[in-house]
Image (tube, rainbow, N blue to C red):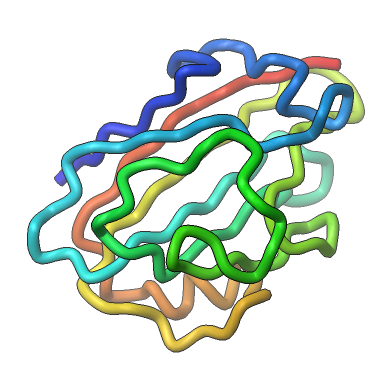
Length: 151
């Protein structure tokens, strides 16, 4: 099953406005989604950049969001708790959203939303790798929004 992930800040495949990057206010863009299966128990969000030098750079990790949540507002709090869920640690070594900040060229940023048939047992502050382990075998639907950015 596919979840439709959208933002009022940019369309799929378009450039991410500067406001949502390290060159602007570095706040998270507004996100919304539809098509979460009725049997889902929780949602998880991973935002990463596969074009970063050396490794895929993680910008945002959110998990154990209740399925009743259908959006995240702009400038989501950079706190351990968010919307009834938890936030993990990004590759900037911070909790919450860290915006695009590519060293050179145009980079792709994938906002990937997962519907799970269970909640994770993770505490706030988990890494993307820990979340992926916890999600293994529990993903029942997913969707993504692609944004791009060049400094």
